[in-house]
Picture 1 (cartoon, helix red, strand yellow):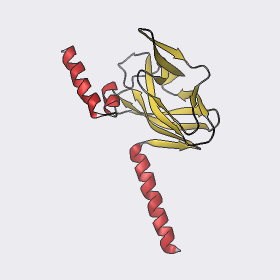
Picture 2 (cartoon, rainbow, N blue to C red):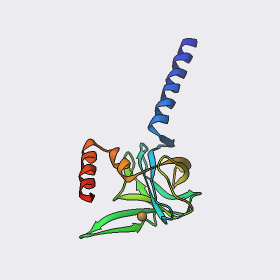
Picture 3 (spheres, rainbow, N blue to C red):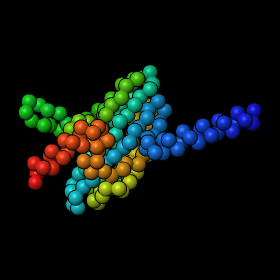
Picture 4 (cartoon, protein in one colour):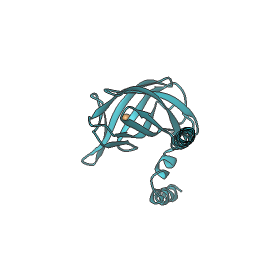
Length: 171
Ligand SMILES: [Cu+2]
C-alpha cells in the first residue's frame, strides 16, 4: 500500500514536470499545447497567437473567445488563400475543435488576433490569456512571446534551412 502510494506520487510528479517543460494545459477533454504570441515592434497595433488544441472527447467543442490584459480585443481569425490573395477573416462563430481531433493555430492559418495592443510584446515575455470554449469552459494559459523565426523552428529542420534562405535574399 505504502509502496504503491510512493510510486504513484513519483509518477504524478514526473507527469507534472514533463507538462511544465512541454508547456501545455488540460481543460476537460481538451489539451492546449504550447500557446505562443508573436513578438512585436513598439507601437504595433496587433499580434498573432498560436497553439495546437487536441480534443480527446467524443463531442466537438469550439473556441469561442478570449481575453488578454495586454490587448483591447481578442478575436479568432482564419487566414486563407483566395486565388492569389491572402485573406484574413474573423470567425464569428468561433473555431471548431472536432471530436477526437486536433486543430493547429499557426502563422498563415487559424490564429488568435490580439488587437489594440497596450504594450510591445517582447521575445521571452509570458502573458496570461483566458481562452473560452463553448463546452469545456474557460481557462487561463500563458502565452510565450516568440519571434516568427523561432515559431517556425519548432516544426522541422527544413524550416530552419528555409529561414537561412530568406535571410540571404534579404541581404
Ligand atoms: Cu488575424
